[in-house]
Image 1 (cartoon, rainbow, N blue to C red):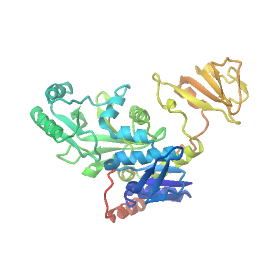
Image 2: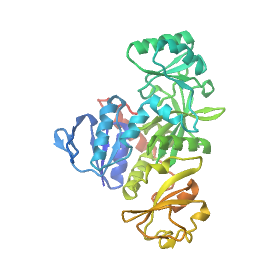
Image 3: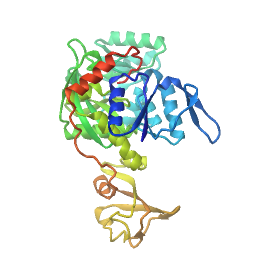
Image 4: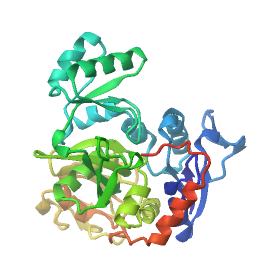
Length: 411
């Protein structure tokens, strides 16, 4: 398989690890500097130029887009999508997750913990907004930023008002958030790949600092994620439409709260803390997706707690093949077949005596656990990520330190 990695710096730890992991599994890898692309947009033939020449065919793209190039970077991802290239994280998901306000708005529709937040335009609304989120101290965030940049803590209401007014005067939009004091400068980074959390670590801020980001000197330790925290991390990533994500969670007395969701999570901190081979997990997931493409996005969105709508393809070896709906015991599992797609024909609300044939696609509604038993085995590797040795981690870090162009800012 030919894999392209979008990254402005080939010597970054994450970029090198992904490249080495892909090559170790027999793939051809090319690293593309995002800024060197040019989009060619014409009727019926979307195309990309790289350094002025047509891009050679690739099977999959792993985006590692710097936050400073978010608009152009997502445009490049979108162009690859139009060309039929599989992109590990879709352009719309990258764009949404990078917008702190938009991502909080989307999460607020779901039963998922988030810090109480406010967004105002008129300066006269600032005092009441501060009161609504719980008053000072309060966290003030620029809507776009990474690695803890653009995040401020205001200890007093008057200070918060001055900071917000100054930022707005400079043309910046800011998000006002409740400060969760009980977290005590710590948070959890859950690393999501597909439908599982492959690793998790707790990050603790340096003394005198409330931001726990690794790039700001935060200490890390590997942890075993509690089931509720794992559930929230997966749900948050899937709501954003991200296949690979770093979900930052706060530990509170009322349960986990989603602080942020990163579409290009760094590998250095999580691999160093856990000594797990996350890079290989990502490459294996790309392989699985190329063999068994993602089902409809509706699979990821719960209509009510524990229920989903899923498209289930029926292969020759499927347990459903050549059985009626009744014989397949689908109804006994409280699963409703909404329709059957067969050779371009839709059979709506099929009767229990309807036979299911190889090649059919069933659109089903039911309990997620029951639906999962009917899905084809598209996840071939369910084992825990293998351990990395210290030599591998150190080699990647040393290669990164030799880089002279630290332009990419990946969270």
